[in-house]
Length: 400
Image (cartoon, rainbow, N blue to C red; front, top):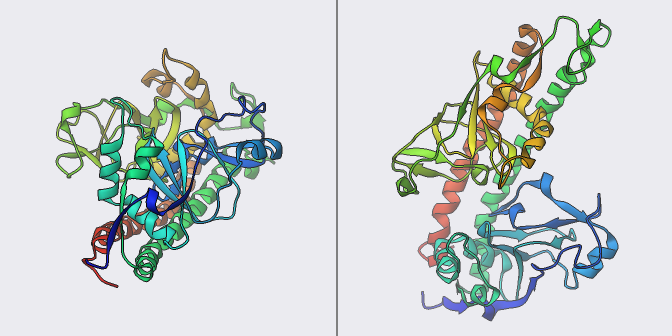
């Protein structure tokens, strides 16, 4: 590796944009309903933008006050805390605002920015970040410590080849993710068309109910009538591990990826379980994030498992998605942060169509969900391939 060299991030950085202390109020403005997106740390997960529904906006005037230096294509976003050390390569010309707990790093032109991004996702870099972080309950990283972190660089041509190899895999993962999002949007639209707008039944008779006018022959029931609810219980912290020992474990909303949980943590002391194809619902801070269990797993106190009691798993999932606004009221409950309990979940009022209709919808949605699962499983394989290649490419063990 004589042609490789070790440098600090500071050595290869042209600019760091750090506006973590800025807020609309401090700048004499307020959030807007449209305009420029303001990303914070909670929207950045390595390789993807998440929780997009929580992204806020600023107008033109506030953007100009806030972003004296603008984010550019090829910049690298990195979270400073909560969550810590998540990295995203900004491959867009969209103008955005950097909000809470987020750095923007722009490397010098004689360095391949995408290579640096991938190196920043590697175990050696992430381990060094953790060693430089401060805090006990929540890890935090100061800008000077970030810039001291080491980066190993080959020659520029090799940097480009490594980045191209890894980004090819990430591009395929992104395509699969868009396919999944499109399929889910179609199933959601069908659920709304049938069970919220009642469009196919407009010509029939409607009757009044506690949830408004519904087609005759339908009724109002509760979630507990059609699903079994299991509230999570966290195992002992000493039982957690990342090396595959015991049962896969999800604590709460931070483990959620698109549709399927993304972080694989394990416990040797599982308490409560979610069964395959049950819907996972975050029940604390905040209430209402929704996902799916693809395998039997342990769930912590931040989650509940909601499983159909008559094998209509897709119907239950899309039903809960349609109830997301109903969960918002629970985010104001509790002494410290929002929460929802088992009685609240079981007692949620829902419109109950004839079983023939729920069966018909479930068959249609299940076909889409199976395709989503196939794409998700392919992405797991692609991610494993990328993660196996990355350290070997970054150390020069595999030459391109």
